[in-house]
Length: 417
Image 1 (cartoon, rainbow, N blue to C red):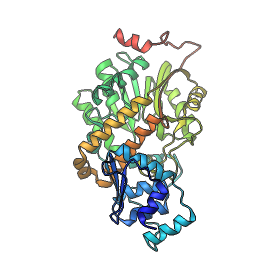
Image 2: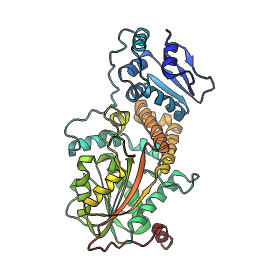
Image 3: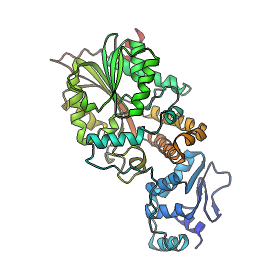
Image 4: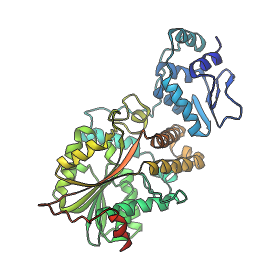
């Protein structure tokens, strides 16, 4: 059996993309929208020793495998690779074709996370955040654009620029929280300070942001100073569990929730409840999962090993129940799933347009990781395998919530500003 024959037997003859193997053989149409290029037999070794998603990711991150052309089309073949199950005969054929060390694992790329200590301890959470966010502020600016906002944008129409859509998302959060001049806002997982700056400039609030990423905190402070908001807004390098003895009128948590972990979920919402004044609102914006899926990214999956170590996704019904058990009253839920797919496609386009700069800034492996994870995530949101929700809750006292009446309240409140 030839190598091309084995690959075709495993993946099927009707390939929508081309596959170029390291021995020069090619499968699929010459005019296919994408091409998977196996640079060496090490790509096959990685697929054989870690079948499925992880082996594919390791080969791509290491440069043993390339994705040329339309990355979304290429990832359709990755799904076939993940589902492929070799028979005993095929295993023997692969071992003969690849070589006697075919089943000897190669060292994983150094970018693969190997965290130590108790899961979701403060120290390990800090290490997980550093792995993901301490890549390079310049790298993130290239990918995220001028808004420097690393969460789902809000597209009233697909033609909006990324910056317009991110501003619309921040404005929606402000409206749901009922922000008014003089209020005190806590932004948990504040990133580079974009939500705080928006709320202070547009609504006259003061605020505190917390992040575990030192580079994020440093750049957020620079941006706040450039905006002339140092007397109203501050960013702390701190764990959300370290914020104590203060009261806030509103709390936003946008794109941070995925790092909390199921074991800390109750404590997370209890802490936030204790920081809110009576009548104060919480807006929790986070990626979630459909029912029936495991509550995480998979311990042997690409995202857990290379992107979000220790990240966990939860079914939204469980999240709402946990919010209410912490003392909140859940008031509104909104899915932005399609908006996240649009956001991710914009980020991928930014990365690909600035590929050489991204590689020069953070290395080829890191650029490959972000391309793979963002494109794969876009497909996940489009297919419904991933979800994202904004959950609004209030610390109601004796039945007094202070919430506006009726559906569409956010739009009506905004119209009168």
